[in-house]
Image 1 (cartoon, rainbow, N blue to C red):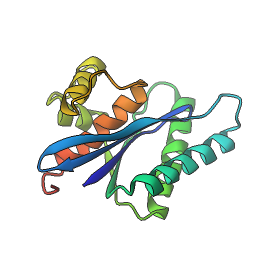
Image 2: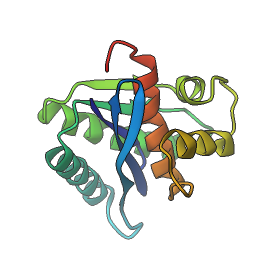
Image 3: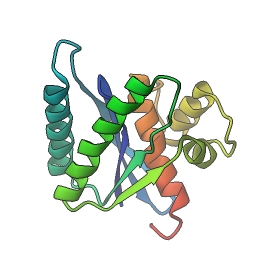
Image 4: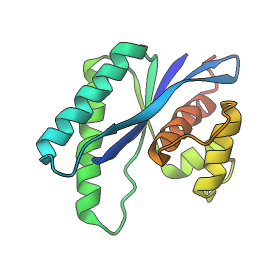
Length: 159
């Protein structure tokens, strides 16, 4: 089972692709779709959409896992991240990849077993579970890998 995890963002949209086989995870790829601040919002959304479609075409994931929007105090940021999530969900729907969504609390519980785990704990577990020599960078890509692993952990009936 190949899982594409996405950490939505307008400036940096992290992605992580893992394969789950017999309760083991294998790293396939990770990184980010970046958009410069000089681009208009519409151009940024097109770049994110195209980037996600390219990943789906390249890796043929069986399922996609996307982090749900965590509403913070900055409504403008939340709105733009919500728009990025929209084009990510649209890309998955257009490519007919089953989509699953997880809250930050679910991701932390799925990776560390504790809903209040900090970023360093999550990154350590991602690195350990994927047998990586170094912590994945940028942080958005590490988060996307955590989302993909979380999906594999929560969905026990997938092999």
